[in-house]
Length: 183
Image 1 (tube, rainbow, N blue to C red):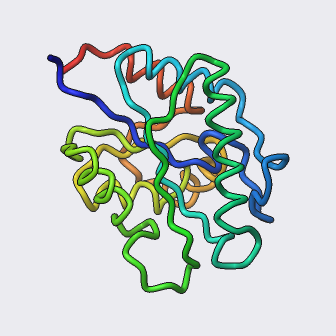
Image 2 (cartoon, helix red, strand yellow):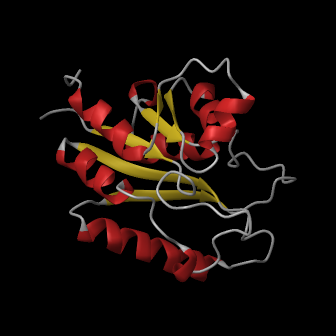
């Protein structure tokens, strides 16, 4: 049986449009063009897609876990309508001043995924739009990939020395990943 393959995705700015006012309801969750198709493409090539996301709006009192679950239900439904599937969602509900281990750039969410799925993080790409996504990936030896959507263009502007694969959007990253021969 072939070894299971995974891709870890940040949510806001990678799959859906980000907002400085936070995504607080399903109505505010709007997919980035072709991001849902990107997830379906990854699935079609044998990758399980895992979402790993900071959601400090919970700690800030802007939404509760039940509302976050409704947002994620919409995301899963829309991905499903494109023929894709999200295998799991890991999120940090804590604020930026929290001393938790799960808020990226710390790697707690990635480690939790690895433990749950018995996965080797050093073989897994982590796609994000912010420096903290890339730092979390680096902390566990995963393969960071930057997309220019969301905060990605600003991340690149602020960190021109970044030496990671960079793509316009999730769909372009997915096309690149799925065009490579399996290991």
